[in-house]
Image (cartoon, rainbow, N blue to C red; front, side, top):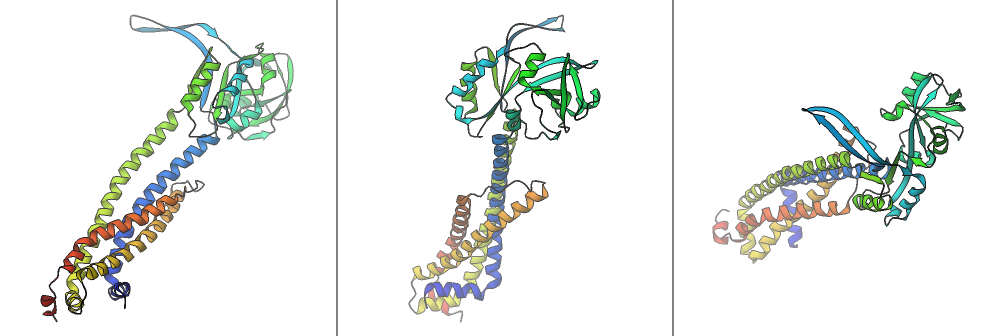
Length: 384
């Protein structure tokens, strides 16, 4: 019979204690795995949405403004030296160093027009780019052609617009090809048409009011891209829209740090469970260890038996803890309404869970192993 066989038989003979050690380590490992997996999955989900949806760089005309106040009373401000963005200048954005990271460039021209007898805000857009920049759009009808318009939900309600209706905008007849479902944004109050059509209606040939740029990946150097675009468009102001995303990511980072601290406490408790249980097991096996020593087992043999027992339980706890933690995250995502968020599986997390479980189990068993190895065989045999 080998030392491994002895260790396995000892575990099977003491099922209650083995289960107690297994449960303590499993809870600790599952807690750490669940926390790391949940935070990483949430961060990955945010980054994926940032990568695929919406603009994260905004380009607007550069203006010099002067704020006026007198006697502590704000009198508004004065803007001067407005530098309009030229549509022909946008081609330079595709030549920047990180041009491969650009998913879409959406130029927008804005202005006020008269629809029938009412004033309305008109936005000329590139509808192909809008499909990437605004994937949340849901259109009742279809995307307009050069002689059509797309009305926001509120604009359609106020102007009494319906799909298929003919409207006259500043003397030009256009057809309402679709109406946007409510978005909860400024898009609800706008009437959209093709960029060229809007430029003609607003008498702004080759002029752009705003440019939205979507970077293709969340790890792209957005700040560097802002600087590169600014070099190509010196007359424009280029800004990164990162405040909301950074705020959410910082919150997740703080939560991760707090969770790590909490998980370490849980793992420490699991280590104490292993220590106390193994010490109790050694004391119960005093006569058994004495017989081993009497028949020729060395101290190293006794220590190896204890470490094998702890190692087997720890390895099982690492595997079960990892699976339990991942299962807990799956359940948690459903409970928190994130069932569509995919779990970001990291193979190194599984390896780390196994290594941590083994480390905690073996370190916690070190003192009981030395205690068993240092036991006097003569005193141990007297207990028979």
